[in-house]
Image 1 (cartoon, rainbow, N blue to C red):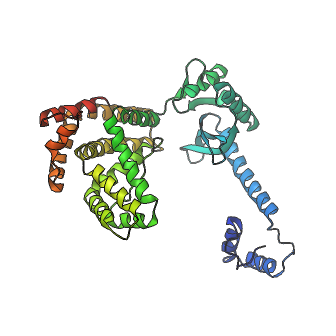
Image 2 (image 1 turned 180 degrees about the vertical axis):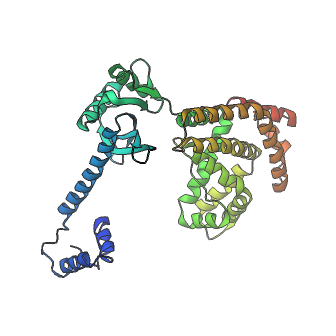
Image 3 (image 1 turned 120 degrees about the vertical axis):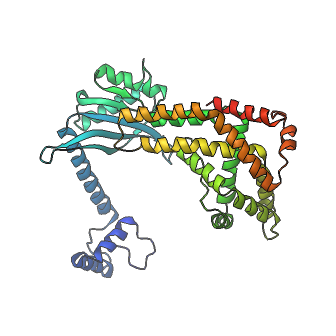
Length: 382
């Protein structure tokens, strides 16, 4: 067993030593093992793994027992490559836990583990999940719902996984993920125009510039009221957080970039990078889109977080999505006009020649009314 002088004893032994501070019997055992190297301590790496396996098996058995006891369930599957570039399929079971004594009903989701898969076609996925349910002694006939993302291999109505499972059990209905659909709508809308793509690329460049240096990152944390986030296509809320951080700290960001570009103690690469980012940020297109997307993403983020509420039901989810759509239809002209007007104020603060910048870009039009129409057209693409 490693001694107290070892800097890194591993998570397991670190937890053992932590618990030993409050358990005299365990403390005595740990002390004996440290003072008598080579003695039987039952804390070797092999026994540690056995302990962990026993604990995992006990937890898994309890979860499976609860699922079987309550009969009906839904399967939730998603796959992702791990650091070793192996495709891992996560298995989650959602079920209704009924306590007949207290007459309480609770919806629970139990993560049962990862399954390594070697092919992502629907036939192989069907084989994998059917075999796993069989080994877990969970009857496929009791499945009442399937919850996947909207990839064709998962939700295809002819040969997708959901259809293959339905062929085995027609009661296992496929349930669309409203949050995933909403996320895809945002991702696709952000790719419809090169100007919008450039805007989000600039946001990512800001995060990369500061996060690649601890010195620059500390400067950014001191300057901005909110930590700059990196965007993510799989979690659209991350894009909302990225836009919000820059929107609320735009003035501080510009001052910091100006400071770094003029700081002789910084490397030439840092000064040049800061200067380039400052030019991208002090740009009418960027400021308009920053105002516009901050308003849009704030509304989307609010609904997405509600959809993640464990108590959310289908009716409420559908109502929230419909309300969001109606809100965008009602406000689409007003959102773009407000973004342009707010950007005019911000540009005047920083001395940006708005009219001149509009004329210099061939895709932008020459007067304010046409500029508003331009951004309203982009919004309608949503």
